[in-house]
Image 1 (cartoon, one colour):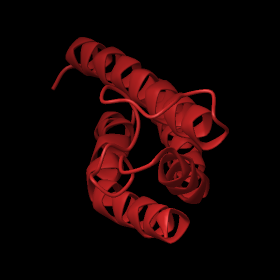
Image 2: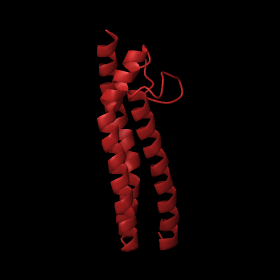
Image 3: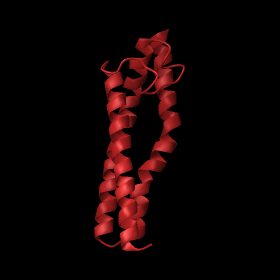
Length: 124
């Protein structure tokens, strides 16, 4: 892969990382503190978290520390990817810029489970 092709890939994945980080971070934080009410569009939308408003908030509050770590990791990986790109370490740069996408997929189920458990406890 040429440097120019890698640059295009880096720009696309960096933009994707930024969008996902902002969306995950804002929706989880906003739902946890009540700014984002129970809805069917944004947030951790499982049957357990959507049962009652108290469970919605509790689920997002429980998920927030892990989502916050995921957002921080996304920022760190994307930053490291650009440093590696500038140092002509193109393969390593691509690995680092792609890592957040893999992490989101790997952490989605555990985060939803934590949110669901907290929602169940709040809904009792």
